[in-house]
Length: 481
Image 1 (spheres, helix red, strand yellow):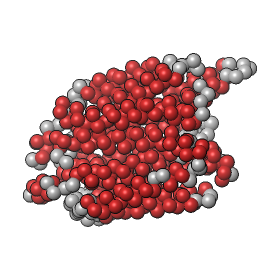
Image 2 (cartoon, one colour):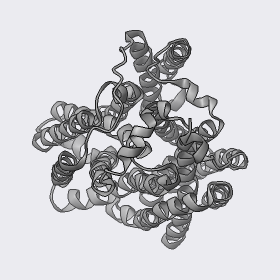
Image 3 (tube, one colour):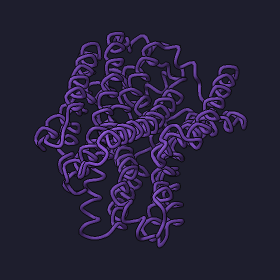
Image 4 (tube, one colour):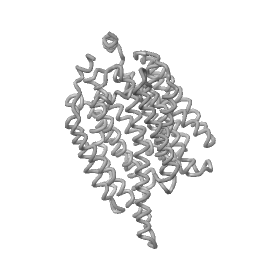
């Protein structure tokens, strides 16, 4: 009966302004994730801090997401949609104001944590809202727009930040986003009402503890892997990974034995959700490896500056922005069966070609390959995620959204760390082999990057095999559950 009431209420939702409010705030959140990457060198010099300390402006952001996103399933059941939306925007706006006025590293670090807390609430809220206000057969287009936000915002973050850094100053990276957040809050206050079902479950402290230790430990370990020379083999990486994995196992076992779990792992019993989750994990690992390695290739291998590298990466971001909503419509009409395998095949071919890059690779080649990679990612990401979430019954909407977003955070941290570690090892091996020769750093960097793309290609091959198991979910049968 609750589902019928929800369906009747669907007719009264102002879908466009609601989605606009969510997407604008989500865009700023994902933009902030990478916006400071280009400014790190300047901030390290300005604040007189070490490289490892400066890296925490990004690591701390990711770590906060890793800790808070897994409990979002509980938050979505404990608080109303409107309460969570206002809390998310309030945190984002406060964090941005603190960042704008930050005069030292400590204050800016606090601002980043506050910003990330707001984003950790907003990301699952976007997905769960789509599951409630949009019918299953129309969700592809909405997920395409969300995918656009999640991919394009981090992609253009370095480009816009590089321009602001060069012309005005690093504070303006945050000044630029403040009006967007205020606009999003105003739209949400006007149109976003309480349409979620609040059940107010009790918070299990042990689940929260093991979730924080598990997801936080894993993300911390992989996010810190690129800071030292040992890469993944250092104690600062191995110990947190061990603690994180052990805690995660305890967390999972506990969730499976609870009547009201903080994160309902039984969502993985739905086959298409499980396949979609794995595809998202693999896809994000490949995408983030590429988006980190290509700027390194352009800057350290081909001699471009940060802003020029951002411009070279921009066409791929634009292509992705066009493709994601388009793929949403294709998914709504035809399903994921052929779209996802073709997308994975494109990714495999592009990564194979990228594994052959050299210092003589032209900018046009990089632009073309990056653009085709973004096309492949658009064909895989949105259909896999939409199809997986469509299979879940209404009582698992909040948990499914939390799981998908948690997987994205884990994939981001692991993909980044593994890529940097493989590149560093490949670069060091090359330098040892060519010891005594001058001016080989650029060639050594490219050699390390080649290894990363080769590794990513093998990950893509696994995804290609898995993609043939994707079947379209019968949304009409899900609605009747």
